[in-house]
Length: 396
Image (tube, rainbow, N blue to C red; front, side, top):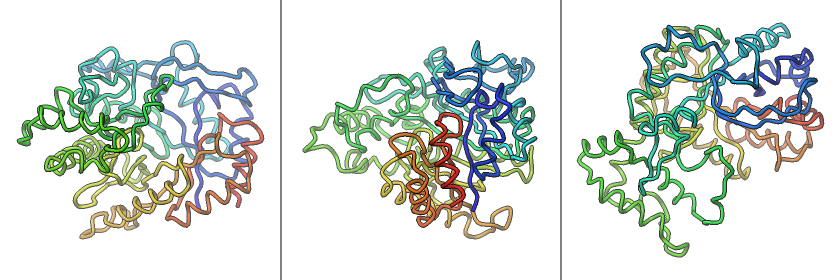
């Protein structure tokens, strides 16, 4: 059984004890952020600071001018919260010196800095409201940005593996601002409807598929505004006879971003493990993008499911992901001859208890639901007590 712990470069840089602390958990690998959105992160065990205020999305490998000179979207570097010229490389070297492999944790379309600067390239809901944190991959400029970003991380970071997050369109959730929306009592279906995109590029895609965009937007708005007693029971109920076409366009868009990206990764680094933060739900948006496809074809070695919710829901999600992975290219073997593995992205922060036995039971449940790996979030944000609990769970 394999376990992975997640960390930021600032958890490692400046703390010579951090690599050994993570190694002592019993893990073999660290998922190290190579690019990440804005965050305010606690660092309770770091000798030099207790808080890192990463004020905007940033790339933690060097941003080479020659690689980005023709690009409209260019990632920012950390401005003020890290002094290193290559935070990812410095942290990765320290982790490898401790015998840990380093997987580049790469966030793609979640970038409020770029979305705010280029508002015509972001997701727009059916009410005409943009989501500035969500770059829409229906735009070629966004896909080009993702391709260049991954190429640079692979070439400059030289990771032992790659973990892609937000490899698709983000939706209503995961904005990054102080969230004040729970009181609206929108159901999961209504959140999914609020996540459907009506940006210029997506409207063109709908029209090209023969859809009446005004009618589609009207049905989405009606589903969102339905009272709790009359809210639609599913996205399909809300969209009616338009649902299948919209579903196919959504899953097709995810593939348009994912498949060329993974092909380039395979070409650049044959044999390097590739993981996707993924969801089997065709209507899924956010960090865990849909990997639902008509033929089940997903070129990845590992699909990591989100396990931050009620354990019962998480386990159902893992089982769905396992069923999808088992359909992977049924007429040909996986490129390594092995099946696609499943990972559980397990929360070790509140409201989970800082208790090793409780986390062990949780992990056992995920494994029983089909998880081959447990990905622990997070090795730098936690107290010494929580870190000890993660170690107890990893060691069983």
